[in-house]
Image (cartoon, rainbow, N blue to C red; front, side, top):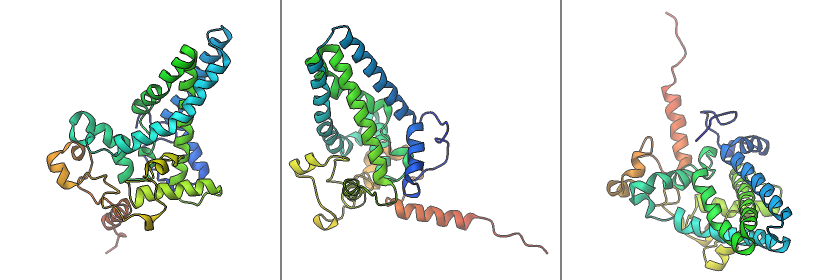
Length: 273
């Protein structure tokens, strides 16, 4: 989890039990979000300084930012579909832990805030690789900084709306209600579609969009992404890192079982003789 300060203590936080103000408090205290904000500010300062020094022209710098804005959704669609939902990462001890942290844990416990945010050590390098080369080609190192700053800001927006989609209420903004509905289908009905979080354009272009439960059959692997007890016999790396393995794959049922178990184990009222 990284630094456990302020909001981020050892307590559990579930978005379906939180409101928007609680989310905002948690969001801005999360270490990765703080790091993204620092990187964005540093990129802005560096790009402005470089522009002021005549290292780049305004239009190429703006073009690098615009290019990042349009590239970002397709990059994250491809990563979500072909990397995070791949079946090869759990097969290697080198990648199984990363896969568990960045996606398996989120699908097995979708509303758990502590495993919803992307890991800083994977997300920031990915944003840099997706944005900086294009920015550099368009406007040199100033464009690279502008592109990285744009990508980091988009990541912050992406993460915030991702959190909102898991809150236990219907957003007032119709567009947010729509993307929430599609994302909840991805988590609780069928994980083989609706890979976009804030933008479903590429799902529609590439044939992975579906409009609700009636459009696709319910997936048996929606909560475990195909990593079950049988798979763990051949590839045990994720199982070894998972407390209480094996467990009920359905997070709703699992939490109910845990609540019942805690209730059963609680001592009864003291009696006097």
